[in-house]
Image (cartoon, rainbow, N blue to C red; front, side, top):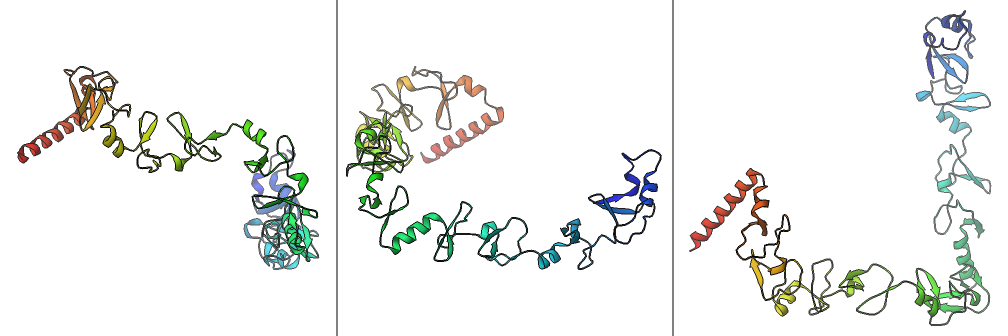
Amino acid sequence: IILNTSNISSGINAEYGANELMVSSLCAICREGFAPNESVVNANGVHWHHHCFVCVQCLQPFPEGLFFEHEGRKYCQEDYEILFAPICSGCGQYIIGRIFSHKNAKWHPKCFTCYICGDELNGGFVKYQGNQTCKPCAARARAQADSKYLCARCNHIIDTEHLTFKGEPYHPHHFDCFDCHRPLTHNAKELHSHLFCVLCYDTKEISVCAACKKPIEGRAVSAIDKKWHPEHFVCAHCERPFAGERFYENKGMAYCETHYKKLFGDPCFYCCHSTSNNEITQFGKSWCEEHFFCHGCDTHLKSSNAKYLEIDLQPHCKKCYAKLPDEYKKRLKKYADALEKREKSKK
């Protein structure tokens, strides 16, 4: 910390000036006094001349004031590492800070890892073939060496007969229902990495796919008041998955747009169902008469004589059109005139 003697008078007895006090103090190294207004280094209440506050090994100033202390003597980081810091057995770099020690060797915490899987051993370790190893890896390695199985429930070696479910071995006493702990049979059900008997499994709130009638354990699609596996929610005619695309319903069945039109005609743009007898066709789309609304204010445009205008292929009543900015209305008129001119030129 660099201090100026003219700025340390706060808290000093009023009969002494700040400069007078610093002049009466001595440098901790050369034991000489300080000149008035001289820059002084203050570390832990001890004062130095700026040129005396250096590493005791290389006699160079401390970079950015950073120093390391050993037995009352101050060192720069480079000399401290060379003289006193241990070397990590993992990466070969000096260790400053927290140290892991084992078998007369030292590591950075991040370098102290399992010999088999490479994970950090912050949660403890065991020795396997003379190397530090995490407990799960050591258990698996011992089981493989002895040609034995490792229980999928407790991760311990199975010394007696074992049971196998979906390729995983279990202690017989660990092959039980996760809820009621009754012994399980080959009819056991798995849900969220746990095993259940049929009775407990049936009590879980599990969605059933409307297509395959099997439980849905992952992502589900909700449509037509039913649940589906994403890959099973398909067009009822071509069986192509919708994959997030729009679908059209008819009598509880979902169809893609192409086959819906082929089978049932144009769907209502509003409700996606077949249009009624009194359909309205405008702008290349069809609406049920009761679903023909203004796109801006939802006013019902049920009368065939109702006046409306097209904006972005959607019907708008005159009131909503009047609220549009003048510049936007000019662009719409210019675009409509261009279309009309193009149609006349074709004729």
